[in-house]
Image: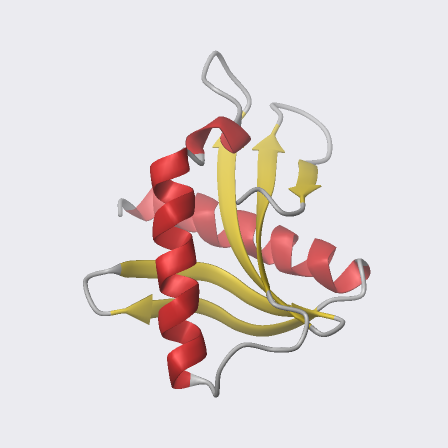
Amino acid sequence: MGNARGALGRYGEELAARRLAEAGMTVLERNWRCGRTGEIDIVAKDGDALVVCEVKTRRAGPFEHPMAAVTPTKAERLRGLAERWLQEHGGAPPGGVRVDVVGVVLPHRGAPVVEHVRGVA
């Protein structure tokens, strides 16, 4: 990942983690990697449910909304990564597993827009 893109992504993930915490969730892990399979941006707990959260950050401009970047294929990969995470961390919680997306748009001026969508997959 390029340096500027990496910094943008890290900033978006920081805003996302803050938003999840404000919503009453506990962030358990960030940037969990599973070999070459991929990465979970944020793993959190929401009550008795495990939340696998994908964070998409974009600068304001003529591109697709960050949420549009989470395709059915990407959602399926996140589900597989969640299964691997659960295998390494003691199995599924009573509330099951949910995949959320946090989209962050950074406007040219003003505060970032942080949007949290629960249960996308």
